[in-house]
Image 1 (cartoon, helix red, strand yellow):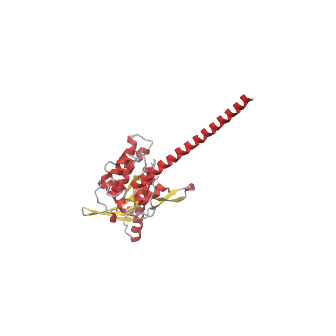
Image 2: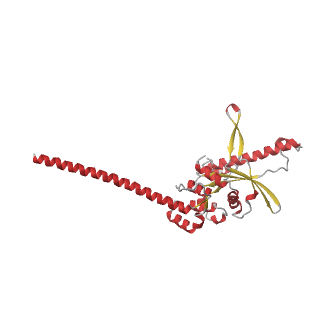
Length: 305
C-alpha cells in the first residue's frame, strides 16, 4: 500500500467524514446519517474460486473501509452496509472491483442467515431448505462509494456495460448492469454541501495546478487552510503532489505557511541551481581566457625568435 492509499484510508476512516460523503451521495448533503450511527465492521471478505484441477481455493478481498449503519426514518428502521473505495488513480476495472465487493457482501449475509436458520430449525419448505432462507427473510442493502483523489478528472468506466465489448441493446438488456457511485472532486460544483473538512480538500484539488485559482483560494479561505487537521493536510500533500512540510507532532497545521515555505525553498533552490550554472560558465570562461593568454604568449615568443 502506497503513501497515497495509506493517507486517504486513514483520513476517510473518521466517522464524521465517512458520514459526510454518504450524506452528500445519498441525501444531497442533508445530515441524515450521524457519525454515531456508524459501527465499524471487518472489511475482510472471503472469496471461493475454482483453481487448477477443479479445486476450490480461497482468496482474501479487503475493502478500504466498511461500516454498518442503522437509520430510523418515517417510523422505519433501515439497515445498510456502507463501503468506501479510495482511489488515488483511475482504475479501469472499478465497476467489476466494486461489484465483486458488493456481491461478496450479499453472499456473506445469505450464508450467515442460512446458518442461523438451519441452527434454529426455522426452515419448513423444500424451497427454504434449498436456499437456507425463509420467504420473508431480508438482507441489508450495500452501498459502495468510490472516493477519487486523483489530480486529473476520472476518465475510467462508470458502469459494467461501459466495459463490455457489446453495443447491441437487445443483448445488453439481458446483462445486468452495475454502476459505480463516484465522488470526483473535479466534477463537484457544490462543495458547500459537505459539512466536514473534505469540502476543503475538494476545493484545493480543483484549484491545484492553477496558480491564480490557488492564490485566490488560500486568500479567501485563509482561516481554514491556516488551521487544518494534520491528516487532511497529509492527503493534500500526497494527492496534489506538493512538497510541503508537515509538523509531525502538531494536530493542527498551517497550510498557507507550508505552501509559502515550499515556494520560498523552491526559489532558493532555483537560485542555487542558477548560481551553480553561472559559476560553471564563469569557470569555463576563466579557462578560455587563460588559454587565450597562453596562445598570445606563445605567438609573441615565435615572433621574437
